[in-house]
Image (cartoon, rainbow, N blue to C red; front, side, top):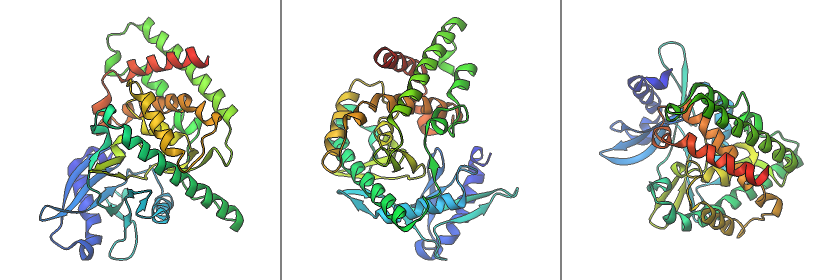
Length: 350
């Protein structure tokens, strides 16, 4: 796997960077920012940040899907509701994407994006995130409005949807989910299950199975209508939200695709679903969302379902992306807290 070799990734990054020499200058260099779903580097010259370069995980997206991501980002623009959005940057040849060959015949796609300053929202204590969640809710409502407008224009013109992921039960937490199957995590045991007896593990598995069945039924009842389902960011977690003074920035549209709009709220709570401040964060997000969008009671009733579905999705992700920064940061006690959340969900919804 390319991403297991940092030196090879670095070489590939420079291969992509060659296509931006006229734009960034020959003296620019790369500095590793993060290894997660993709590898990202800071492009800088004399320690001044110029852009962010992304090496895309091989096999995760096709060329057409990546082009669609860039198209959607370009359509949204640089700023919505006072929130900054990262934008793709064209190569010297006038393209958003270029390929770098790793020496074995495998091609890794790369691109560059505008640099946004700030610290990740996830680095702030939960209680300090409250005002940002209201701003995020408002920006998310705007994104959803644009999504619905785009869908209407597509239907009117007879155009197809963008070639992006379809986020649904199967692709998120089904047995062939894109980020892995949480069931296999239970079977193979994460490090924090080592002290559990086999009987306890089976009890936990039964809890997850019951919660999974409830989630599936709730999603069927909720449905996929134009009011509930459309083009979403898909990964508005704290690592993809940058705080700079009084400005919020949104980055990483890599997982944008077609999903339930309320998924974006659940994603914003990623890895902190078990924190006691979550109800206040949800209220702040909804307060901001209602400034530009509508939340029906049916939407509100699905919040805990989407939160737990996201949590199960992340359980598989932590297992399949062990080297990712967020996986290392949140792995401890993640399974234990997920069991507790699933049990609470069953008590309420079962």
